[in-house]
Image 1 (cartoon, one colour):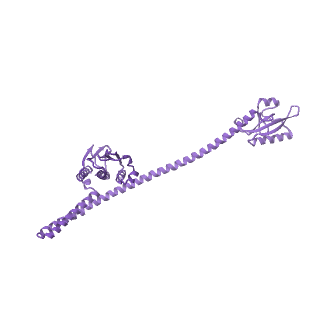
Image 2: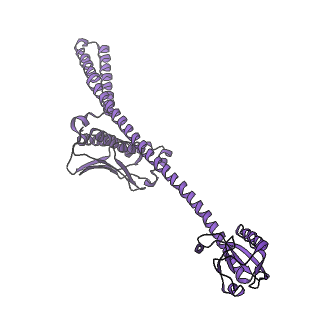
Length: 377
């Protein structure tokens, strides 16, 4: 077997080839002259230009000037040890490719096929990696945009919430300061008419009716004012207002209550105070509506460094706390708990529910507190 270049120079030869061709030298051309050489070079060129194995015949000169006829098979070979030149592997003097030549040809073909398949897979992987990197970049950009949008949404909702609470405070103050004063003046004016109607039963009855209506209007006005903004919250602070709320609810429902304050009490920001107050109202409403016949409801305020935890417990019928997801609550029409969670999220707080059938319910609200709050309640 020989390795030759396209111009016929011998690059390598095995021992059998050296024995069959005594004058063979590596680096020199095969002993082919004249028209036979042209035919030989065309054959070598065809072998170097295709991946197939081509049969052929070589006429090589002997030392005495005669020609020896050699049947051969040639195939292209690219070997790293020969600087990547396109070489041709020739197998001489065999009617058919022997076993070793067939095995070598098959291995070269398989190696070429494997390399092509690896190259194809490498290109596919590179393409997939580029697509994945582009997708990751888009996902990161989307995530950043979503986080930014959610942050802006939360800020807008928080501002709207604060604006709403400020407006409720203003309305409550206006109702108390203006409408309440006019109503008190109306009451006194009606009472001053009583001495002038002595002996006139019908007129006195009419005046008593008007006084009763004025009193009813005053009670309704007080309830509306409390619903808008509890006066005790602004005048006495959150803890006192909550005690008053719990006591009033206990008197109205006949359900026993207790309230404990643990830790060193600190003033609350106004929006924290009104949020926890509204949450307490909603929790008491839920106890009265859904807890069955509870014997008590307890409130525990825990002041700890940087945090305030409000826990509302009852010994009512309870429910499956695992079913308290947003979708489940919406489907059941229990929007109060959803409102409580939303209120807490607007002030950066959290709300947890712990309950099981027959074991009562616990509502746990936590808010972060700053040491120096700009607005206290």
